[in-house]
Length: 392
Ligand SMILES: [Zn+2]
Image (tube, rainbow, N blue to C red; front, side):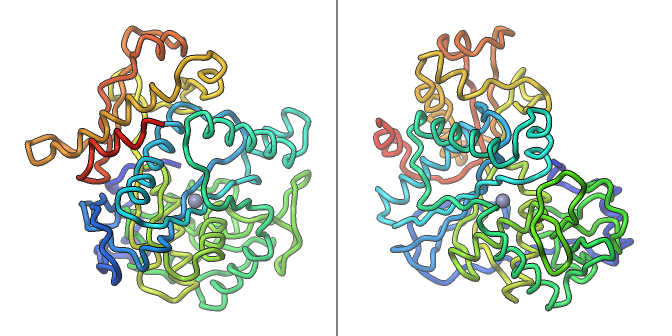
């Protein structure tokens, strides 16, 4: 569920009802090596020098796809942008980036779509995971160092949940689900966005202590895939997978965490809460970088599956047109935009207008109608070098 970055009155009332005050940003400047790059850190809301624990092993966790459908151009732009940053860090600033990317291969949407198509969730996920990788290859996006599938990390996820329970921040219910206790987290919740999950964020959950608590483990429903656990048969909640898998690879601290801006809340906010409780640390991830939306029809409408206004990467790929050129066109504009900040440009979310009112992908791409792009400012250096590096 996407929520606005600022809290609404309802959210503030809910925080008050939960005994939570206003969030205070308490970002601690990391110790380590200054890469020489500045990034826009969502934890502070401003550009910060990117300081990593070790430049020979920069830890970077990327929230990857939920593989239940075709990826669209909004996804393409996001992955291309982060690929640019990764190449700059690696090739210009000499960092050795170790990137882990999640593959969400079990969740509500996968189960629903698999039932509709009369296939198993595993086969559906496998199909779209493969297509995603082909899409990324077509875009010349470098693969992560390692892909991490949720279904291959179930024992680790269960152990992670047990750890959170042991620290008194989660509880199991009579029906066999486990929830994160938002009350126990108190004012520490909300480092990215000053709000809490809405009471309706997880419909159908009736045995929570507080309506805003979120699921770590979901008790199995009839006809759903499940795994055995200390709380009964079930499957992981969405957020816990990333905390667990990132920790499996990188331990208790993370240099960089990336994803689309719609993941900032509640997904990344919940990841932070889970991980900092499990590791008993003050700051699990040092830099959260978020990619803005790809907008259509001016600035009012983001490209999304739910709005049915998307163009899939596969359609573009099969058209034989230069998808990468189109994406780079967007990204070059995006790269240029933040550097003009000192001259008075505003920091805006990604905006991309599709002129002419057509939704035909070939027409849009061939005519070069993806334009007027701006995005969240990620860095303030080396535009020309970035362009040179991306002549792949
Ligand atoms: Zn994630």
